[in-house]
Image (cartoon, rainbow, N blue to C red):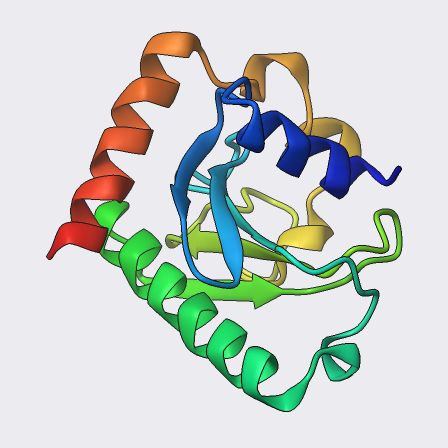
Length: 150
């Protein structure tokens, strides 16, 4: 079973602490490391490796919901710009990385602190001190969930 499918099974068994909301085509979860405050993932309910492998109606609904998730993340975490990526090189189950961006959040790694999130070294983005605390996680989940109700 793939890592994303395992995390979805934890959601279904009510044991994934990062779970925020179920939508028709996917699950919204807060990222466990928060260099980019508000980093969120949208996990597709279907186990496919590519967006174009989804049936057209499901794909269109999934993209619409992903845009809704992006808007909620943007508002909840006061993003200046949203970065949205679906890579799948490590976990080949369709999922989206949603990064709320703010000026200077790359530090010295980008031109004048600007550039893609992946310019930040992996070891820094996923450093232990970037792991979210339980209390911070609950606050972030509450913030994000409130935007889906608006």
